[in-house]
Length: 336
Image (cartoon, rainbow, N blue to C red; front, side, top):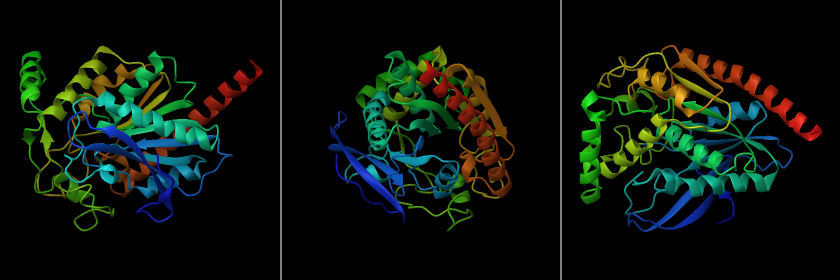
């Protein structure tokens, strides 16, 4: 583990975790924890944000919003993603989502070393699936309280495979699994001309600035080994998880087809089927709050102005409850 050093974002710091050799044979693995501002040992609340596919942490507006609510802010670029990618590696590639558990645990340990802050975990898209599976395993081994995890926010979590129903059948999954063992890096979806990505970046039709090497507008190639890992994660989620903490799920109220015209796809989820998110939202445990955001994009916090405002308002509404609830629980535990 290295010391904190200046991040690519002004006013942010990063720390790299060496994770050893890649079981998938792509060299040494690293993860990168990003921190907003200086460490605050007096902070009683913290956020740990986890990105999705073809993504990394760059949304300082979201970080500022959490900071204004009294949260110390951290984000993790998972191995082979964003800051953690190394030359010769396939971006975002893994054949087992459980391999992320170690770096997520390390991130919590670093946050705990600063001070005893209770952590709110946030996950977007594929990151929402990853953290839900991780928290379920953490709860199963009785570590949730010891790791100081108090809540979960999911932003358009990837709960099922979009597209034709035949893609979700057991025979198709069996065939995918058999082929993936032999050709795990076979590309099953190539990058597009842009689509959703062009609605985000300010050089195209969006409001945000980020590194297009780490988040290309047309996405990274989707490989068979990676999508098979995702499908195994979906299958486990569909059997039922228990993340062990109260949770909020934010999503768009509609899906739109991803086409080349950015004006058509500015107001809707052009990546996932929001009906699938609604269908499987009850599978992550109890005390779930589900809020559809009118006209929101796939990342609700990268939506156009009005849907983005509503997304932050709904987040604040839930945070008001969460802060009151967890403060009451902490007081009762102290009185014990």
